[in-house]
Length: 243
Image (cartoon, helix red, strand yellow):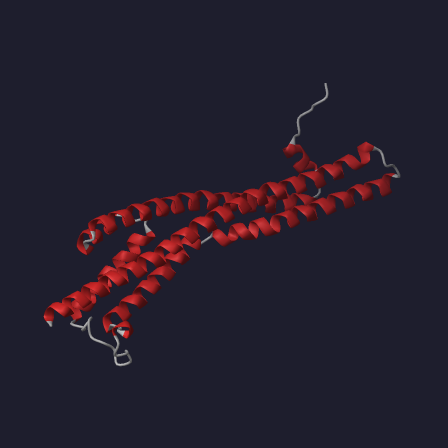
């Protein structure tokens, strides 16, 4: 009875040393990339959902203290972490006695040119926090791009090596029948298939994560700008009351 199924393990065991090393390297890339895909899929999905939920709560509440309590509960939201940094920095500036509403020495005399010394510190804190969140979001994702770019060529190397073995067998045995060339061709095809099987999911996941990360980055910058506008409006309102 002729077996019609493809025994990959048998092909691997009968392959040459170089092709075996190629397949083991591709297996490493596959395990690493799928681990990253599962980890980042869970992390980015939670970040996306919790950030949307926090932003909705923030605009409904419009109270910084209540929003801070809510932000502490959302451990996976980058936007909530950005808000916590901004809130704590604002609280620290208020306790230090820094004149949040004072004009800086380089500010214009016009109302449009007004800048606040306290909010300058707040802007720097928010900018650092955004950079930290972006580093956290993109961590390990570039490895997927590396996998998608390199594994097809690694598989191609195994393909070329398998074909070389086929021609070598033809030369040694002086025959070009199927029994002579089939082992080398099997090695070549399995290496090509393995390279593509590793690369395709990595490229799809990389593009998916990049799209999600860009959306979250936009939300971080928008929320940071909105938070600064709210604080500056409150400061201006307090100054007008004092006058």
